[in-house]
Image (cartoon, rainbow, N blue to C red; front, side, top):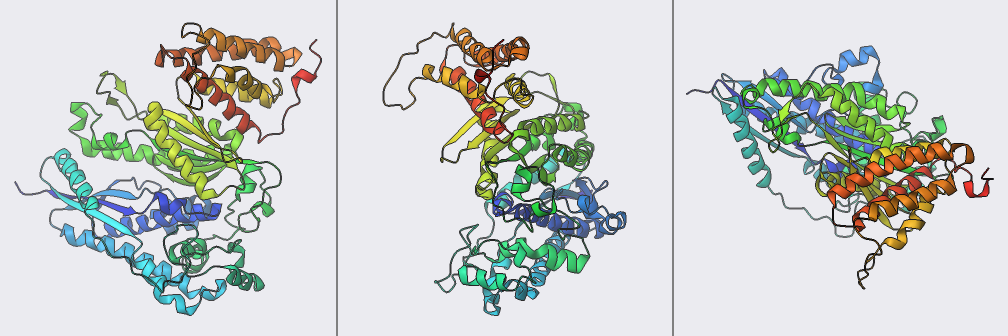
Length: 581
């Protein structure tokens, strides 16, 4: 049977490592936006040549209609990275699908080269030597990793889509390998990636660029060694977006807040990423949020749909694409702004953001609620229970001091998101605490376990000064003696039994509430917190019916997390020093 069309699946990378290579908030935004920009160029070429886009949705997508977005003068929305690194489209049977895909790839590579050339032409503004030309463009040419697959469609879109996915996976696993060209052998490596040979950097270069601040000196606050790709990320918004496309990317038109500005909720001009020295004033903590939809591959492939709905997989793709686009374009930015954060990326089900540490879990909770609302029209069947299900999401959060390396914070958030999905079990959230001592600790929970509710109640009472700031620390002091085998060197028997574990933990928790509550709020605190704690412990007990330590470690993790995050706010006075009547 002759094909009625061809299905194209197109993917561009690298993604996570490329975005995470960041010294500043601008670096994070720039990497994300650069990928969205290149994907937009590919989609525009695909549509112009006669292709029909299936995923993602083009509806109200500013990056796919630059001129209209410019007229609307909504540069903040236009400059928000919100396209995924993959798109799916249909090519009419009477067109050469292979040539069209090759042209899309060629358009992306040409745009990437134009961006690099625009940056190179501005090299005098940031002291990049002419002699770096060969190394610069060699790194540019080998950076992008583009893969695509074409599959003929007869009358069975579902079969073609599944086959296309298998074939693209095979292509990506066997992609062409280009030998890494060695340089002069005496060059420093890129400080952020650790791979490429640097084209700028070092103390002498840094002193030179600071001596003439009229150029791009304000974009470089450290004597880092940077390769071509990270140089482009640092300056392309001025060298290309503003100069070539008249996009208002300067700090006055499009403010990118510094990590210190985000952590301290400082919206002043001095807290802009282009002016701030990135040095924290006081003990302030920053959180990175990595939000990701659960089982999105199965939702897109139709594996979770009923038999009848799977027959119309093409229609499902269009509906799902619109739902994800509505979430990314209409909801995400408002939620992040409400929690005093800065949005780095919102591409469908995938979100990366920076927020003050004490708002991180509340922000994650609201993002999930908006995601559930946006995708409630998508309905599937749980393969095990056979009940009706809808798309859900998991979140990874990393919290660290504002002066901690930003790329470490982002990578830890990404790891936490994977831990939420695998170790805890989706849908869930996971939090990583990166303490200044070097210690790293984790806590996480399923969304409906009661853990988040208990966390939120404690955080609210701390914020309202109904509880002393010492409360979570006091709970930890009371429960830590029940931990056994912490070092793994010696064996200790549990002092309590599985049957009494919940009662013991609740007793110690109640005692801490009594001692750390202010007199007028003590009774209400006991009611609210013990009920929430009992629910959470009941959920933990159900998951670990014959174990004690998981209950204690989870409870300790919750209290450590709320104490660590809440330190970003002004500490409340200690209740034990207040009169108890």
